[in-house]
Structure formats: structure tokens, C-alpha cells
Length: 132
Image (cartoon, rainbow, N blue to C red; front, side, top):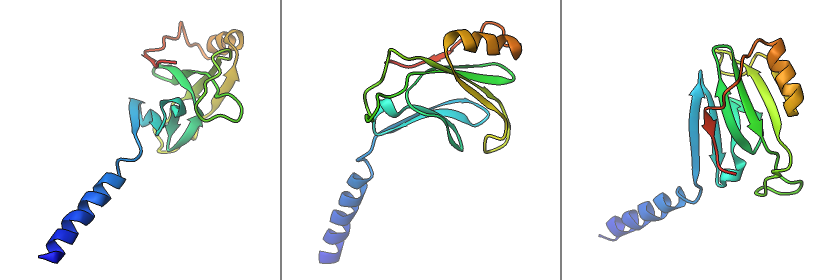
């Protein structure tokens, strides 16, 4: 009987330990996803590895590219977002498990628009947006 009680207590303790961290993800396409662990401010874009660090504010894509808006975290902070800076990135899509094609950026808005022109990305739309 003692073994039974100990096993129930152990299973309760172990199962509660696994819920200490909160996390979430949004699949974009082709294995690309926006993920966060513990804090939503850690939201980053990954494919196998982190391609664009926190904080991802918006993501869009077309048949060839994924593009993203990012606000960096304030220096020496894991949770405060620097909303006064917006970086833009463009990722050439791949079907490989890991990113084996170029990641362009960070760009300011004007340079992002120029790069979009060069890559023939017409009017990029950010379908996924996240709260700041």
C-alpha cells in the first residue's frame, strides 16, 4: 500500500514540475514557426534553429520568402521590448530541416522596401501579428 501511495505522490509531483514553463508556437509554412518559451516577449522565428531573435511582432510569406518585423529586446533585458526600433528580415524559404538559404536583415523600413523590390516581393503583407 505504501508503494502505491508513493507512486501516486511521485506522479503528481513529476507532472506538476513539467508545467512550470509556459510556451507556444505558431506554424507559418514549411517547418518555419514562431515560438516563445516562458515569456511571450521571447517570441522568435525558427526553423530548426532560431533565425530571428525576440521579439517577433509580425510575419508574412509568399511562395519564395518569409518576411518579418522584429522589435529587439532592450539591452540587458529578457522581457522589455524596444518598441522604438523596428527591424525587418527576409528569409528565403527552404524545404530542408535547417535553414540553408539566405536570411537578409536586419533592415530599416526603407532598406526593407528596397530589398523587397530587388527580390520581386510585391507589397508584402504580414498575416500573423502579435501584441506588443
